[in-house]
Image (tube, rainbow, N blue to C red):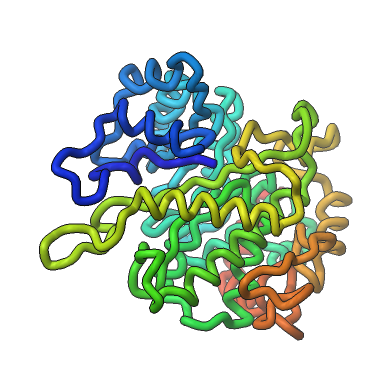
Length: 398
């Protein structure tokens, strides 16, 4: 269980003096959290040299993660240096690189992922507004290009375009999609299918409840109860997806998972006319931690410590051409296994939750998936394929 230091800015609630950095670290340790996350984009992001001694104090032993907005290789290197300085094995990247070329985006993320791995840091890509993953549907297109691969298979071009390498996992913060995409108040088949496609690639989860009009709402207001229930159901389903994957070979015991409570200060937190925040974010962070533990238990694992350790290469294969791409047999087997049920979800039972309906979410009853993506996603991809585009690919092939 992690707490974001950024989420502790301007706390305690309605106090005359805000907590110092040392006091924030003490509160994290005393609050029962296993570790803390540093958002390098925060207004009060601590200097690594000031934070590291606080984390290494006697008996503290807090685990660490770094969150960073990255717009290029230089920003990635700076974030990796910070992670190394504070001893953080995990880094969550909000990728501020924009293009309509999904292949270019995938190549960028895979390059960053490989660079982080070389530095000993496990990188995850966050679902966040005003980043590469801004739009829910476009993010699913980035993750799953199976329809496009089926078409390319006719031209023997599978090695030129592959879905985003499945070693790249997502740090799931669905509040950005709920608010940024103004998702419907009630679950729909399309939205739940898209969310499931993201959860199938989850490496960690972040705690915040949003509505279609506000990215962060007070947790105790009755008007928000439907969204609280919906997010808790998503978290349970996300934990189940993560835990269904094998633990790293070097892990001693079950796979561990990070859930980061990230209730941000204003403008995330709603304020009243007096400029004061409407709710106590620290009390709500503790509430989120309890809900996450309940969701984790509902996901079917006895493990109670929620923390993400290092990633492992689940797709290692000596037949790979370049360390990232698989061969035709691997891709074909994956496509065959994923048709009609969604990649990566074939053997993962959906746990009961506030909105769950047995083995399938009620909004998804009778819905067929193509590789985890509604059929219209494949249609959008096909519209991007012109004769000139194919000629360019063929020329590159020769």
